Amino acid sequence: MSDRRFTLFHAPQTRSSCTLRLAEEMGLPYDLHVLDLAKGEHKAPAYLAINPMGKVPAIRHGEVVVTEQGAIALYLGDLFPETGMCPQPGDPLRGSLLRWLFFYGDCVEPAVLQKAMKWEAPKASMAGYGSYEDTMAAVEGQLATGPWFLGESFTIVDGVFGPALTWLTAFGLVPATPGIAAYVERFAARPAAAKTAAIDADLAAKQKGG
Image (cartoon, rainbow, N blue to C red; front, side, top):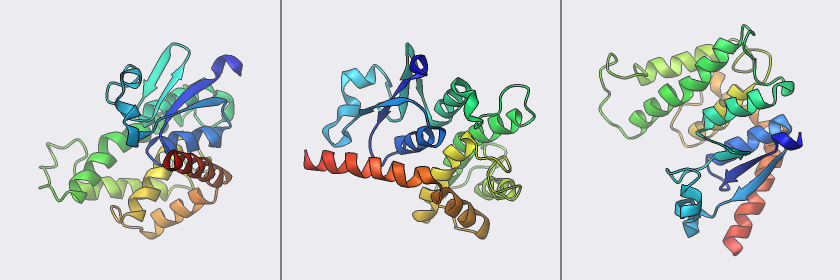
């Protein structure tokens, strides 16, 4: 796997922790490039050359740079098809995989932000997500189809939705309905959860101590 080893640009206990968790779930070979947000390292020219937005996560694989959680998850899933966590083209689940990967960024995030900020809801015909209620109903409906987002098997879609729903319910931005709460509990019980939390806690302590 040496030619597939990649670098994850990461700041502990941020969105990039989701990508770190996914890499651990998949058992991937990676190197961490840790950024200290308190010191503004994410806004330094060296990192802005990687991601002009100055945000994490980002990965670099050879000459390829990928940003955005869903895009990174798909890139890694296709780069490591043997993990079985990313249905490949030709698999009937591929369409559902793409649908829900894009649904998170295109629908869930803007719908939840609108709700959390108490912004006036746009007309459903004008918003790509329709409405907050429709968005969350779609998520709950999909979760009802199996223990994981695409059914019986844990996939990269869960690598995106698992951390998101964990965080959103913890902060009360999404109600912990029975279906969502059970999903979050299953996600938290996976072995990679404890390992990722330990890595992040150690990195955060080092940055605080430094």
